[in-house]
Image 1: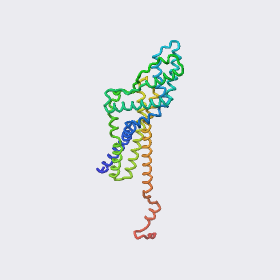
Image 2: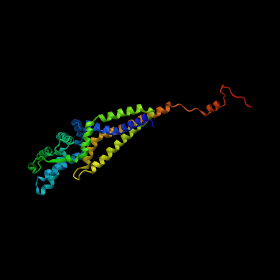
Image 3: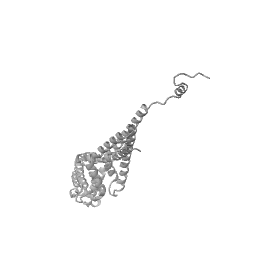
Image 4: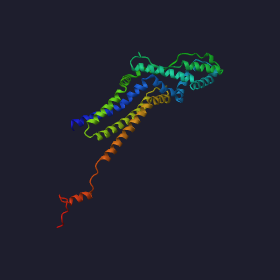
Length: 301
């Protein structure tokens, strides 16, 4: 293989390998690292039933633990659970959810940047407990005035849990748009160096489509691994909703890359077939064989 063709092949392979990494780095930079984008992505989850149950459950447990209602304990617990669940459907919960996610985002970014000093990512239940206590008092529930409003923090993530993943993710955030830009430049250089450029375009497009399929598969597999590693006390339904919300744009990007790659490969292949010269017909070959160099037909013997 000529050096030029070898160099072209190496550049095109590197470009295809950088496609999924470029998609992840762009997602990590502009959707996960950016606080406003992160909060906007998480905002719709305040209406998700699994997320509401995941918040209402710990609030109910924390409140009931502080009340000794004797024979009425079961009734009071039912009232508390209903009040906590109904609160998750109010605008006040939307505001609390946004504030909690912004604080959690800051804690996660501090952990990724090695600036957390071992801090954990937590969710403070005090605002929710206060609203539940107020609602129960208005409904005339016994012992509601005895509910203490304490800053009860639910740990969502320990900084130590990030490990090597945190450093790798931070590097992707730093890379940002540089990785997809590098992929484009490598692809252009590889195609220009190729001896058969149309063939190089087809192969690059197919490699890009394969990279998009790999990215979609990685998002799916990582979801299963992430949910399987959760402790038993964490709601898998709520965690799945959060994961799906955070990776939705990455999932869409994977399918767009796959579709565009296949479309470009098919278009280049059709153009190549259309522009290829048609082979001579057998009748024309036979006519040529029966003519003399001067163009005259020989007389039969």
